[in-house]
Length: 239
Ligand SMILES: O=C1O[C@H](COP(=O)(O)O)[C@@H](O)[C@H](O)[C@H]1O
Image (cartoon, rainbow, N blue to C red; front, side):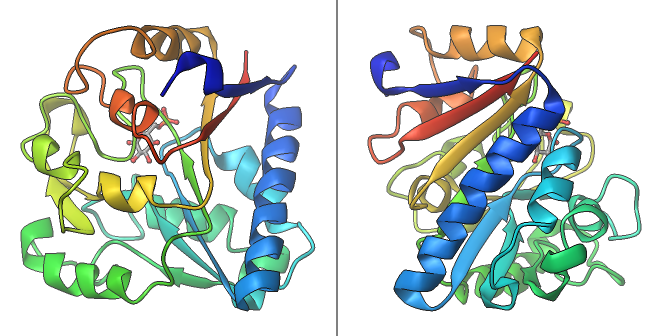
């Protein structure tokens, strides 16, 4: 991506950012429903999206026509504190959004297969059944420059970032990832009709600035998204 085309909106605080991002994403979902009768949204986990989820859940739209999925998941049960699915169920699939559909990235959130490799085929067929391109994808970013589960030194990073790869989801293991992961691949993320990056704090603003400079995508994997020709990323930032 040419730096000049990167759209960045700065907010005074996390609450105003959450409200602004929620309105933008809701508008995208309404447009998807109006155009195609249904809409799909992939959201990130971690910690940052909490206020955004709460603000999105109260947006007025036909949530029964929306399917929510995850950008990536930790290979843990849904009742684990680190489960992105659990976070989305508690935070986003509430209020008006309680009637939205949800497609998770673990094969069975309760009984969970032992490894993401064992559950991969089941998850991949579920993702393949989603209406794609996704209407919107909301990415986060770690201080190590990872987005989705595209971790620096991830064992399947090259494959996940292959713009011509066929896989929709892939397992990922990396020193910085904690437990094994499963992630949407770059073609699925980059193929979304709209892409947003939600980051907060000066440290992440600094990582983003560094990512916009020359350097390889395996060191700061967010670069793979920033540089993808089909992605027009809109950054939402607050201190
Ligand atoms: O592990 C993850 O981390 C990133 C960033 O999380 P944050 O807590 O620093 O906001 C997140 O985007 C990703 O979905 C998640 O699995």
